[in-house]
Image 1 (cartoon, helix red, strand yellow):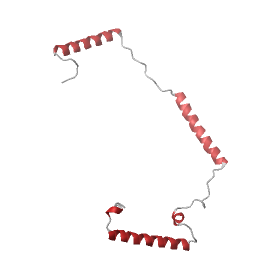
Image 2 (tube, helix red, strand yellow):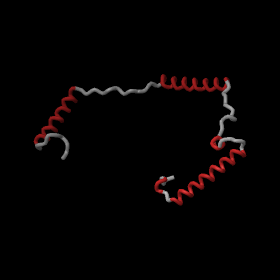
Image 3 (tube, rainbow, N blue to C red):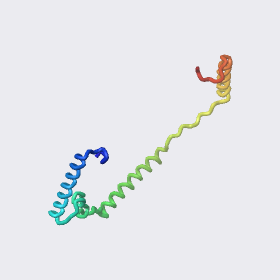
Image 4 (tube, helix red, strand yellow):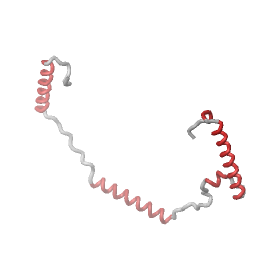
Length: 121
């Protein structure tokens, strides 16, 4: 219901009251037909009549054994092929010297252009 009661006209309110009274009359009639059961209980599905499912011990044992087998296979697979971690590469002294020279040349170029950072612009 999108309208609030304050925005409804008198005729709309009277119509709403009439409909509400009809609904209440039908609910009481339904309750009398069903032997006094409350309308809310009738509309909601009841779980009282349902039987709870139970798993047999044998089925539970089969499921447990299958899961243990999956875990064993997974453990075996990870033990057989450990994650290959690449070796860390080291920069040689000559490489460091070359990189240092490149950086110094790059900064000299930046300073010669009168800039304070390497960013373009």
